[in-house]
Image (cartoon, rainbow, N blue to C red; front, top):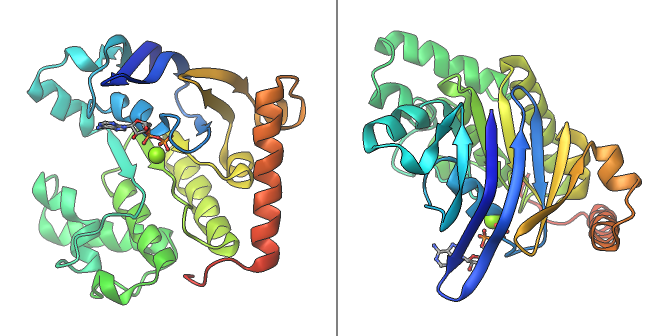
Length: 257
Ligand SMILES: Nc1ncnc2c1ncn2[C@@H]1O[C@H](COP(=O)(O)OP(=O)(O)O)[C@@H](O)[C@H]1O
Ligand SMILES: [Mg+2]
């Protein structure tokens, strides 16, 4: 479904991607892990054509993303649902309007049908009764769930999640992870998720890929990457990730459920 082929990207003299290769198979959940600032977001921005590669390419559904004209790129983007860090809801719109935004914009169905679809999506994320609320009435975890409902509203073939659990306490992170698993499996979507949370990676991944110094240095099932690693860099990253998560669980980090 998605191929990243020998991707290079630098900003000025800062080399971010340096020959990254990755295959995200159709219907699978691929999780990208890696330290902060390693280029994970830069990598997935190439998948939807928000960034142009210096060399190499991203191929989605047989199409080279950087070679598409504006019309074809817009068509391709309709296949995608996205949940970015912070959920980025429109604060002046109700929850219902936020979730139905793309459906309304692209007039894909009559308005009463849109409301039904929005209610169905809010139900899927466990919040059927918040249609008329405003985003500033929601907690961090609720905002993420609204973001997730919005990401699935168009019944996308591919969903990109950029740090969906960052800033949430471990309990809410697990709720979001379970919803990601439930919604992606129910819709049979191909998903690519960025996280630095090893517990989340382990739960939601069919395959885990680790980005390090501009390249994917490990790829495999969670079991292979997390428990049968010989590469010292990957091993260290996985172990530190586990310790951080345990510490957070003990301290009960955050109170933004
Ligand atoms: N549009 C941009 N212009 C300049 N530098 C950027 C841009 N986007 C990302 N970077 C830089 O690229 C590096 C990788 O960023 P990013 O992909 O966001 O990291 P992360 O792995 O944390 O998601 C960072 O040093 C960041 O400052
Ligand atoms: Mg990022």
